Image 1 (cartoon, rainbow, N blue to C red):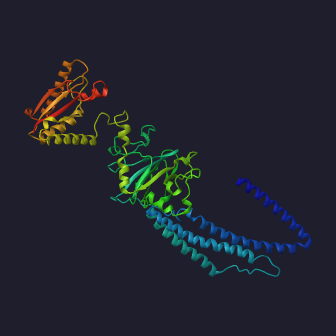
Image 2: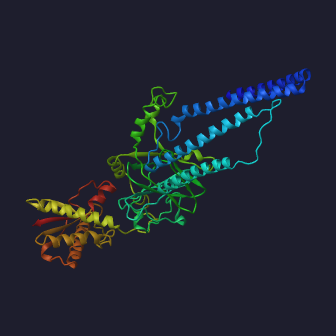
Image 3: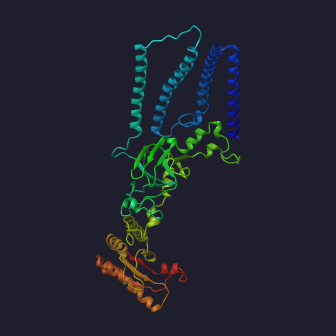
Length: 499
């Protein structure tokens, strides 16, 4: 409807101009060409001055009216350290260029009025003025020098990389049509290496090298969550075409170029909640976010920082929006504790895992602590003989008493514990499920307990400090009617006979 009104208005203006032209032509014939010509000059000159006044008033009033929706003004001051400097240099530039704009427009239209053609009036002409040339050369030179030098300082501060040894958290954003893959480091604080040749959209979207230990704890969240007042370095890459990593409220904008990693370093200074409280003070933000749902949240309540792509990267460009949350340190740590390693949840012990069948250092350490905690807890009892300790990571080949290689970690830990508690005497008990012949199960449980005892003997644990006992299927801890229950019943346990 608005477009139709605009087109209709333009058509009417055209008709009016044509008619006025015809009227002018008729008047010219009646009063004489020269007189009409001078009158047209006067009329045009006056209208130009009126247009100049209205135009400048419109520019100033509209800029003031819309300032609260523009970045850098009203509620939208920068939410990062370097952003304040950028806003400042833009304001300084706006002041100088605004002054020049207003002065040049006034002179342009005033000269059109002052030097309109009139009878008996001749404009003064002079070909050269050294004073004027000095003025309009030196003043712009001083202003430009100031802007360039100030801008250079701001640019160097905004685009600087982190210094060696400087405390910073690093994350990664990889753009593709039409989304972002985000990656955070785990507890080690380091992002693992990548290789584009390893990219598998289903299982390895970033091409992480699973042989690199730093990749083990990296995780891929669906949103960007950052702690306030913490310096952040963002690795920026692209997997297909040119994209742009754009965080408007933080004044962060950097191209994501295929094959050419870039970066941006910034420090957020306002949490999402703090920014919302600032918006709350403005009437235009205290209206329903969804006009069709007047009972829903207000605009300031629904506000979130966002990550967008500032390149026209394809028809789905708009869908690359991601939510960004800036939170206090304790809230960030709580969110961090809920994130899970991509490797451990999606790759571990699959065909894509180069470590399949082995143990990670973290897993070895965890098992060691679990067994030590269980042993010390039982050892601390007045009568530890009633406490069974499960050797959860002792495994045998199916139907056999041959220990699997992975069992050595658990048994090596037990050997070290026996060395530490040098007077402890233990019983090693073997258990089976109820499948098969009871006598065969009894023999198998005894053999498995003996295998564990023999391994510990080979590690230097004295024979008189251990005894091996087979219990067959007589002491189940779960229901043998289910596969899961039978798995639990096939176990090896130890019991402290004396301290």
